[in-house]
Image (cartoon, rainbow, N blue to C red; front, side, top):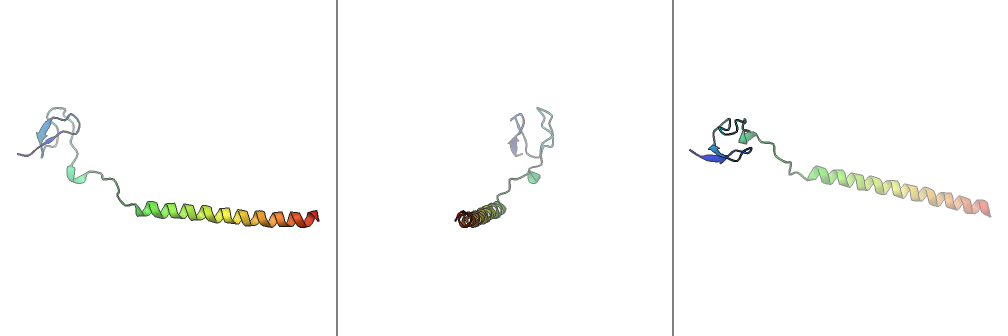
Length: 77
């Protein structure tokens, strides 16, 4: 029989065991483990949208500021 280590108590148990015979904890099904998402595309898209949105807001702010300063100069004359 194939052996594996219990993820909780680290004792050697049979690979087809459902419960560890040492710590009596239920073992996870190795075929149904949660895996970390390795897809970086959604993160890249979200980051690009945030950077683009921030750049747009800053450019609009600077345009408005320039317009306001030009109006102030005309008013001061």
